[in-house]
Image 1 (cartoon, rainbow, N blue to C red):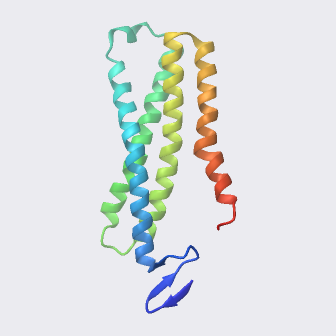
Image 2 (cartoon, rainbow, N blue to C red):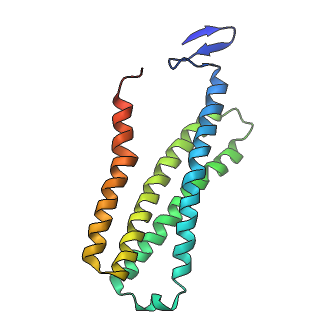
Image 3 (cartoon, rainbow, N blue to C red):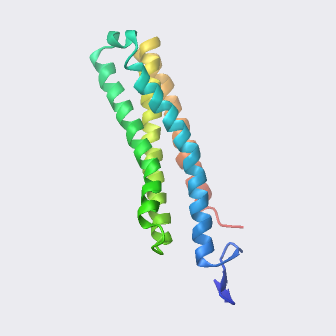
Length: 164
């Protein structure tokens, strides 16, 4: 970084102070969390609602276990994706933005992992109920590969590429 009158030029060409960089990073993380939170909230609400449906009593023991895994994964994802708000409240005005950004990033990653588990287990649960276990596993494995490629493999490959 090259310093000039209290400002720094980062390797990415941005002319911002450390505080401005942290503010930008935190704002970007919050935007990402808004997208993920919407998805997890819809899934969680669906899962809470289906337990009170009349046909829910017809699911077998394996489907009940899968439902509990799905519900717990969605609840955990919701907690992890909302946790940065609590961390920010506790650390607000304590000059700890670097720690808020770091913990928010880790919580977001863990929340997305739980969300992936919740999505995949919800799909296998519903498809198993509708068509049977073979179709459910086929669809869910395919979806799992898509999640792994789009959420993990592609970003990691892009991360390894040299910056232009």
